[in-house]
Length: 351
Image (tube, rainbow, N blue to C red; front, side, top):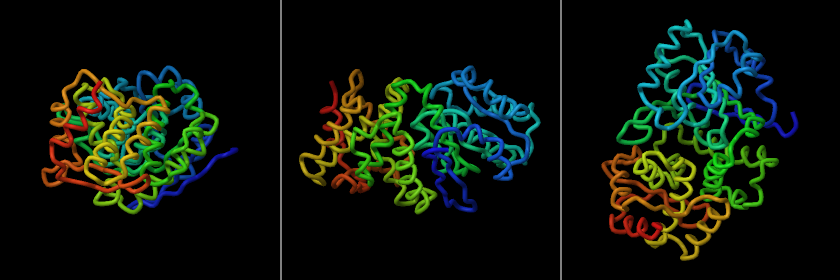
């Protein structure tokens, strides 16, 4: 497999590989055997991907039922997970069974949470199909669902048995979803790997290289802080702002777009807080814009976006925490930011 990489992950109570490159889905049956996953397999996917991939998945795993859920963040709920439990029971899944989560971040989060809680936990495998899920949600073992009050308020830590990042599936990925994934890759550049701040590398024929870099960055952070007690919080750069915008928009904003805008907001707040050079927000915004990602919003009130942050799961001690930048590659976690500063940043980014 040319350009393929196998990235090892050390996790609490388990180590597992991440396979990155073209053609890994063809090896899926063999990989399951290698990982000693010999129980009954069920594939969880969504209504968008099933028509595209059900036939090829059935050829690779003819005995595995394909369980389909609706596509979209609005369906990332406990009701959908309940429907998965029913499907698991109907399929005869037991404690030795294996769930294959075939889809983007929403699907992986939900299927992983269902696997973590069905029969007190059964094995699951992440097979991310979007660029965003490949570099972000499929790595690190966080699974969960949303409540009306906010994103990912119900969840667990559940490590997969392996992650299969087959870049061939990106051929069917729409351009908007490609850009959303790039937002999470470039986030890794702002946090540590400055080589990811070169917009020229973000070509589809270069996907294995920059995906592997982004995954290795996240793996390093997660291995040091598997339960998000310290360092791992830096991965939320742009997310405090972004999640709030998603919530206020009732998820009309896609996650990657909201995070990209949120990184611009975090850079501005970094300057307002006196943490960085005055040119940093300009450099951040210029790169985000050059990647075709949004840097402004409209139709929402800044006060409503700020209020939505109060249900963010990243709060600590009742305080909203922001990941800010002292410089490119130098993040810092800041709490107790005066509301008027947050509102002024939100006002400045409104069309």
